[in-house]
Amino acid sequence: MTEDRLALLLEFYEQDPDDAFTRFAIAKEYLKRDEPEQALAFYEKLAADQPDYTGTYYHLGKLYETLGRKAEAVATYQKGIEAARRQRHLKDLSELQDALLQAQGIGFDE
Image (cartoon, rainbow, N blue to C red; front, top):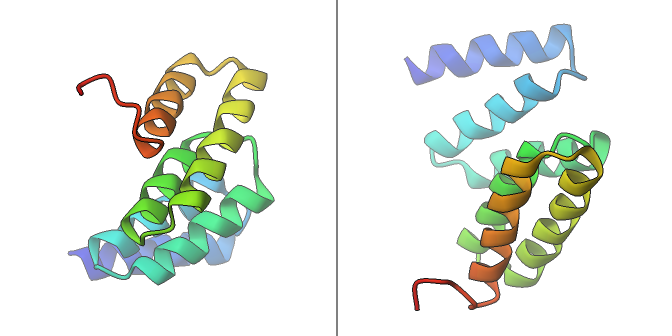
């Protein structure tokens, strides 16, 4: 099922490589398949090409954390916070702020 879903998403991507949701979904599928480097490539390219697609930053930051790349995670959360503020995406803003605090070791549950 996962293979079929990824194949379908890649087909959508070929048809419209600028569709942010498709690119995001492909990255998520690669993570489900335990292919973090493939996911990382899609997330990073999406963040670079479409910086206003705020949903990317949380997941990219978490992937950086998983890969032990804390400084890049923190920078990603900060960029996402800026994008969410510009667009007034309050839910994304809140999630990114919390992720940033957690990455910096300043969680509320301590």
